[in-house]
Each structure stands twice: as C-alpha cells, then as structure tokens.
Length: 232
View 1 (cartoon, one colour):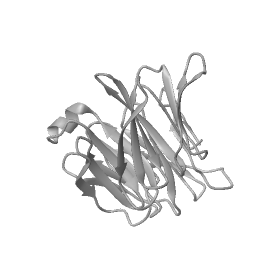
View 2 (view 1 turned 90 degrees about the vertical axis):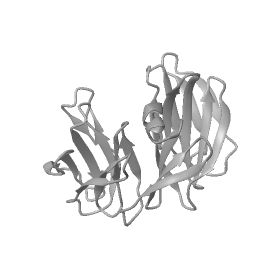
View 3 (view 1 turned 120 degrees about the vertical axis):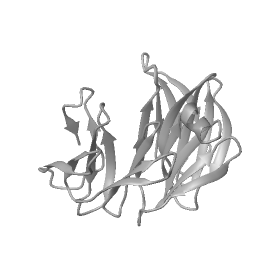
C-alpha cells in the first residue's frame, strides 16, 4: 500500500496499492465500500476532495494517469494524462481557490520533475511550477500554497495562485522522499534516503532540527495530531 487518505469527516479511508487497485474503506466497520480495479499499473497516491454531491477521490498512477471517482456513486468521472512518466503525487485544490483562478475545479500533479496545475473542468493545463531538477515523490498543501520534495535533495514552497517559489529548503544529502506539515502549518518535516529526518521553519526555510539514529534510508514521515512529535 503506497498511499492513504481520510475523508474530511473521518468516516472513509482511501488506499492505493502496488496491486493496481484503489479501495474505499468504512473506518468504523473496516468494510471495503468500493474497489476500483482493471488498470494495468500501480497506484501511488489518493486524495479526497469534498464536493456539493459528496467527495471526489483522485488516484495517481504509474502510467502517468490521474483518475477521479465521484462518491457516493463510485463512478469514474475523469481520466487525465498528466505526464509520460510515473504520476506520483497530487493535490486537489478547494473550490474557493479554484474560482480565484477562474475555474471550478483544480488539481496539482507531480510526475517526474514536472509539477503542473490543471483545470479539471476541461482537462487543460493552466501552469507549471518549474524548479526541481529531479523526480518529485510528494506534494502536500492547503488552499494557498503547497510544498514539494524531490530527488534533487531539496524541498520547495510554492504559491498556488502566482506559481512563485517562496522558499527552497536545502540540507539533505540524498533524495527527499516524504514530507509532512504540522497541524499549525508553521513547520515542515522531511524524511530522506540519507537516513535523517529534518524539521524546518516554513516561513524562513531554516532547518530547526535534524533527527538521526536510523541506519538506513527513510521513506515516510508524519506529525502526531498535537504536532509535538514526528514519526518516521
């Protein structure tokens, strides 16, 4: 299982997997509510986006495709080719931010070193966030900005509306494979194949702390709910 995401009300869990499926789970009962399959490539990440009709679930696939399903029907409502390489990460933006960009629905995708903003209304490309020199495994964010980590050993903070790179975080000595944002949205934590995790000030780009102790590569990091701990 590569990716997991909770719905905003905490009742549903979506997972993406090496078995080439995306599944929707009932958090209370543990039952599988939906199974999306029949695709020939691995699914890397999933995201929920609340809509007036329920939720959209978006999945990123190894064939460079993004697929979107509408809940509660489970119907696939859109397929979008975002790159010739592996679509590794995505960030569905809220309707208010989308409308500020002149569209109704928007999606940010990461595939290879390409980060792109898409209009989901017609599948057109709006803009590209240029800067990373190697593959981008993950992007995370909110309605105003997002953060990307890369195999070029850097992390970048971007303004969604302007496309400007606001900060570049440097210090890792190998690929940065995972990032997490604190509940207060003031800190970023990163996990790298150099065997360390780092804590960063989002506004200044400064490294606050380096966590050492692992004897091999790190692939995932997350904050505790109270923001007082990070786990790798």
